[in-house]
Length: 363
Ligand code: NAP
Ligand code: FE
Image (cartoon, rainbow, N blue to C red; front, side):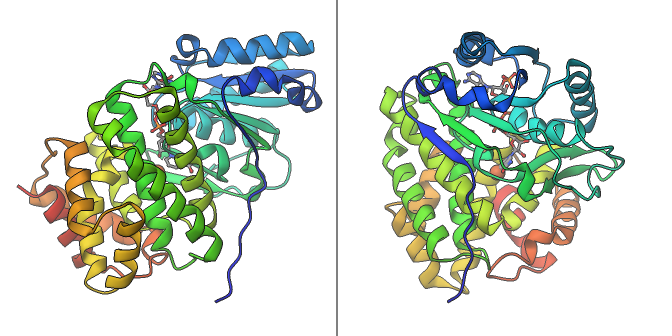
């Protein structure tokens, strides 16, 4: 079977890796814009980045107003700061929201961008260093930036090889303050990436190897996720499992789980990873009817069979959100138009998607 694999991000992992490798920031330029949310001021990430930049004699400005599910307006405001400050590079510290916003800022700071969702992304973007403080999206190793598109009433991604960060630091210590709900939701996002990557038409030997390892690590962390108690090693393992799953989707893309989940986030405010988790068991059950061996392999890598996989996800989710039949029909119709339907090894019709949504969220 032929396949392609590409991963241009230099990844450095381990306790205090930002401080210990601070010299690597120096070649990026004289002026940095730090793109972040509110929590990085409390979890140590902002302090570490600022200390490194000061030690290197690099000037910096901070934009700390990135919201969850970032808007295009936020990207434009932040890009204006990047321009007025004369930033040579961007340091993103935070969850998927600040990391994704930073990628779009890197683009808009350098190019005249009209409609960001249709803009042809050329080569000129600010170079980026990413420091995740959640363990879920893997955005630090992907070329995707997921933004809220209010005109289309959904979340949409922009993607280009130029949007890969150059450098990513994985230090689980920044997650010591992460609330249990965000820890679980983001772990479900990573789980979904690993599973969806193995169900992609673009899955290959290398992405499968990374996905299986991510699933193995996530399966091993299931007891900690249930208990809500994490040693430093658990945090680091979750972070690395999420990055591995990010490397998977960087190569395979996602499937209709993400397509369906976007409506739950946009219309119902369900956090991204939780939205995927809500849909994943019924989606896998539908896939198992068509490609049972592949689904056995996926669940096996997680240390479970399909029933146990679904039970574990259910335990992590707790009480499920419910949607009306009208909502489900609307969301299924929207998901059917998303191009990740064509990216799945099992072809889901709109009716199939509706069936998954009913089983996951129906009254
Ligand atoms: P998030 O929206 O970045 O963060 C969720 C919440 O956790 C925020 O309130 C955030 O606060 C807080 N938080 C972050 N780190 C924390 C820490 N260490 N301690 C305490 N609180 C912390 O959530 P996410 O799940 O990481 O990212 C979701 C976004 O990523 C979605 O927009 C999704 O579509 C996107 N995504 C992107 C990719 C990709 O490949 N690019 C893949 C999957 C998902 P502050 O932000 O205020 O600090
Ligand atoms: Fe995701």
